[in-house]
Length: 428
Ligand code: HEM
Image (tube, rainbow, N blue to C red):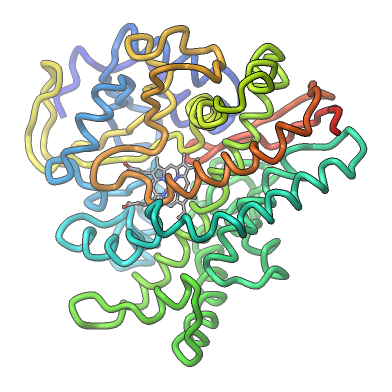
C-alpha cells in the first residue's frame, strides 16, 4: 500500500475503530471530514492493519459491484484488530474466519450458497407471509397501546417484532427467542458494555476472540440440535431448507451449515429492529414528518427507506483487493483492505439533499444501507415488508409521540442502532 500523501489524520482513523464514537455524532463528524477532505483515505489506527476508508456513495457502489476485484473472504470481512485476527487464525488453523457464512464467501462458492435462500426471500414468495406478519405486527401494536402511553420503544417493541418474524421463518420455538436475541447482541456488539458477554471486547483484544468463540460455540450447539431434528422430521420452515439442501450434490459441510443458520438468525432481526426504532426516533424528533404520514399513508414506504438510511444499522463491511487497481486516481495494491462506510455513503451531500434531515417524502432515496452487487442484502425485501406492515398498523392509531428521556445508541462499529428509546405517546 503506497500511503505517503493519502493517510488520514490519526484522530480520524482512531474514530473509525472506536465503538464509542458510533454511539454519538463523532462518527458522522469523521465521515463528513473524510468526504470533504480525503474521501478514499488510508487509516492506520493503532493495533489494526492499515485500510482504505471508502466514504463516498459512488465509491461504495463501484467497489460493491465488482465482486471479482474486491473479495469478501480473502481477509476478515468485518473490522478486526491484529491481535484478534492472530487468535482467530490460531483457532482455525490459518483461516481469518471463525464463521463461514455468505458474507465470508466469494465466487464460485458464494452464488451456489446464496441460491439456496434467494427464492425464499424474493417478494413473490414473501407475499404468502404477509397475513401472518400482519397478525404479529398487530399484536406488537396492541401491546404498545396497552402500556398506557409510555415505553422504551427499543426494548418493548422494536427488538421483539422482527425477532419473532425471523424465528418463525427459521422454525425456532418462541421460548428460545430471548436466547437468540442475547447471542445476536453478543455477536454484533461485543464492544458495548451492556451487550458484551464479558468485558467489552475492545478493552482487551485477547478477549475478543475468546468471547467470539464462546458465542459461536453456543450458536452451533443450538443449531446442531435443530438441524439434526429437521433432517429426521422435515417441516415447512427455513431450518429444514438449510438442513436438507445440497451444494455440488453434497449436504452442506458443518461450518457452512452453521454459518447459514447464524447469519439468518442474526442479520434477520437486529438490523430491522434498529431501523424500526430509527423511524420512531425520527418521528419523535420531527412532528411535522408524523403529520405528513397521518395526512398521506402512501408515504409509509418512504418512511421505511428514510429510517433505514438515517440509521444505517450495518455500519461497515470489509473488502480485499484481488489485483492492483485504481479508484479516483488513487492506486490500490493487491491484498489492500477496504472499509465500506455505508452510513457515510448515506449522508453523501452529492447524492442526498440535506442529508442529515429525516424526510419521509425524500425522493429519490438512493440509500445504500443494504449494500450493493453480488452480496446485496438477501433480506432487504423482508425487512422493508416487516417495517411497512408495522407502520400500516401503528400509524392509524398513533396520535402523537415525543421523547421521554435520553435515547442512546449501541457502541459497536459493525452493526449498531438505538439501544434505548424512551417515548411518550397517545394512541387510539
Ligand atoms: C433494515 C434491515 C437490514 C439492513 C440494513 C441490512 C443490511 C445488510 C448489508 C449492508 C449487507 C451486506 C451487503 C453487501 O455486502 O453488499 C447484508 C447482507 C445480508 N443480509 Fe441484510 N440487512 C437487513 C435485514 C436483513 C434481513 C431481515 C435478513 C433476513 C434474511 C438479512 C439477511 C442478510 C444476509 C443473509 C446477507 C448476506 C448476503 C450475501 O453476502 O450474499 N438482512 N445486509
